[in-house]
Image 1 (cartoon, helix red, strand yellow):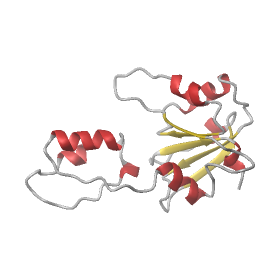
Image 2: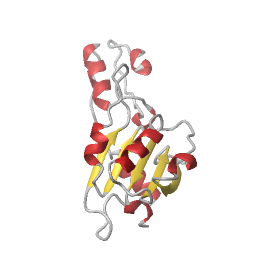
Image 3: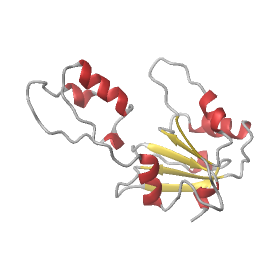
Image 4: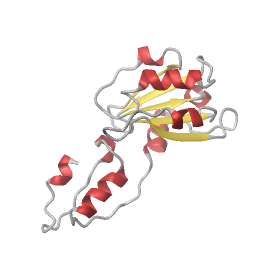
Length: 166
């Protein structure tokens, strides 16, 4: 939001705001702009869940491996206690995509395993999705925490057979 605070509502301008590098959801940013009287237009694009996987060669669904996909975030708003309920609720999906997954990576992996996912379930972690510096780390639920390295970009995690389908 710091960048958005610098926008002068009286100064018409065109701003390209790269959400892939931002912290917080698009809805939060739209609320901020509206509250501060800053005119804006949301131009839909390709979701990071689709773009990053396509760029990495990992399908969200695959007729032989996955017919269901669940998208969840691993980060709560500041001051709100961590809640693993949503992740438990989607643990049976064939493919699970977790946005902003670095801080709670170990907890999220443990929650999936405790919720019945096999520790040998294929996993992929994507950092800086669709950017030239994109990094993809593959493994399993059991070993992904130790393999993951974070380069400062947003971390997205994919779990399910599709992580090794291609």
